[in-house]
Amino acid sequence: MVKGERYIFYVTFPEGTDRDKKFELAENVRVAMKIGFLVSGKGNLSNTIVLSDKMVKNISLSEILESPQFNESKCGIPYAIGYDILGEMVIKDLKMPEIIHAFIGGTTGGGKSTALYAMILSIISKQSVDSVNMLIFDYGITDLYLFSKIPHLSHPIIKDYDMGYEVIMKLKTELERRRMLHQNDPNNPNALANEPEIFCFIDEFHNLMLYFTGKKRKNLKEAMVKLLNMGRGTKIHIILAIQDPTSENTQKIGVTNITTTLGFLCKTHQNSQVMIGEPGCEKLLGNGDMQYLSKSSLQRIQGAYISAEDIAKYLSGLTYTGTGENKFIVDTSESNQTESKSTSTEPVVVTDIYDVKLPMVILWSLSQIQIADYRIQSDFNVGRDRVKPMLKQMEEWNLIEKRDGKNGWLVKPKSIEDLSDEIKNLLKSHDIDENRIEDAFNQRPDKSD
Image (cartoon, rainbow, N blue to C red; front, top):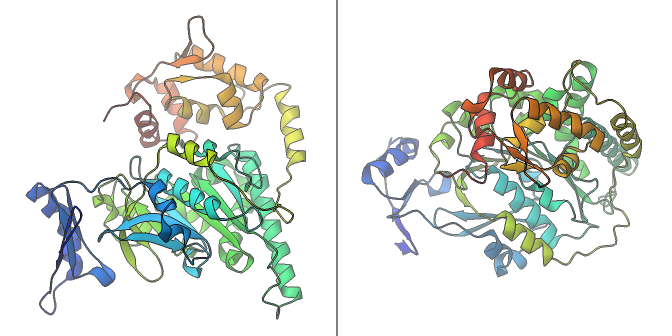
């Protein structure tokens, strides 16, 4: 059967054949045949082999979001993921039990960040402010800031770790309030009818967990476990994303309670084991190629793609609905006042020398060609008086230099080899290993593959 660029073969196997073996060997066969695309199906497509003499073209998320299949979908909250191996559009329902929470993992270039964008855009394109609210934690190097103006946000996008802690604690309080509403009227299926669904997106969630020690880390872990265990009955969804899905990074908050995983290209079969419970993701093709794991099956999907420019364009054309009368709003005014007071005096430090946020500012800077004071203030939620010492320290370390006659700073290192041992050790002491540093450099706009 021929469908577009795909040649589809339906095959039969002798009794006793290990069908998973053909799946494991598919990538080796593709390379040996020197073709662009070869996929062996699993689950209900285990008798299917799909190939193409060239790579299947990128799937435009905008095309799916504007399609009749998406706009006329009967799903409670439709999620435009991409296309299956047969070229059929894949749209999942985020209100179905199997996707109460989700885990998204994969290395740079795999498609993790784009999957986050696709989920957020899918939600806000059809859901009113009255039906869905959002929290977005951005502890990675992404374009999530593009969503900073959407009305669905319950709090401005969170990049500060202390603020992240406060917001998670308030989300746990909201969980407990909603549970009480249900317990007070257990026979009423509409007890939470007026409460909006809450989607909490946390990119590079392990950074938040590693930031704290002692009682705060314990409180944070307990809150996250509670949200994952009890979110289903309270219309609260947790979406966790991570670039380095290791057992150490993921077991901190019990991701075993998450039954939906979007597993993208990863570095090792151990990473794949953490994500989908078996090897395979390390052999994916990158650029959105994923293994989608749910309670019912493991499905190969080509994730849809959208650029930062197209996200901005799409957002500019959206018309939002809803009054926001029952909107979940996280009030951190007291925390903001505390932050404001601390930034007006001496900078907060980890030791007697370095600002607590300096390592993450350095990591972010390594992904840029040039940086500006206002971006650090905005992205890391710090005041101007706190940014100046960080920039001065980075200049002394030869990480940045002032642009001639212009505002802003040029980032001098172009690869990990340009970093001194002092910088590497500082980053390492904050759980930023060489893989994360390399990933930052690989995201520079001037980096050519």
